[in-house]
Length: 194
Image (cartoon, rainbow, N blue to C red):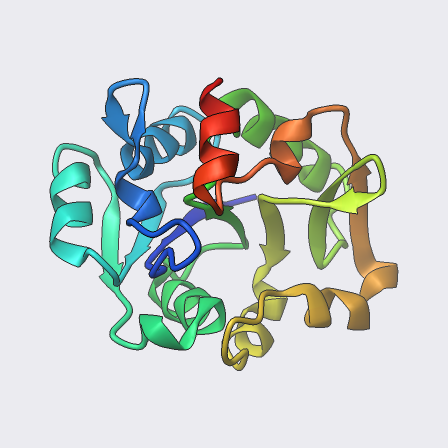
């Protein structure tokens, strides 16, 4: 099963007040750190969607073997970046893992655990990690959902689509809080680094 990686790194980071993609995480831009973890996993390649701070994000990724796609409509929100990324995936992708640029604790090991769980449920339309009752990321979506997910608008993620197909989704309980840990605000970022 060919599971492509899709890293959404196009947002404007309005709550953070500066581009999250470029925050320093252990001496590297956050977008490069997350790309490294994805590339060290079982994912079949990595496509990165860029938009805000595009030139700097490109520069942060220049030495990595990733495909970069620009979302000119990034200001419309997450839905437009998800659509741009899904349209750019290789035609042979059976599924995609959608990674978010503001989750620095997501590791290659966690990515592989999610992939293994998804492969064990070949008829599932998606896999969503759950930590103590809270839905998290990254998620895996089957190619059969790509067209529907490309219709999302605004700052809407895949939640509405997942709700529609909840019986065909693997809700994977995990004991790793990384799936719900993100850096949306300066306070959250300081806590992560603490």
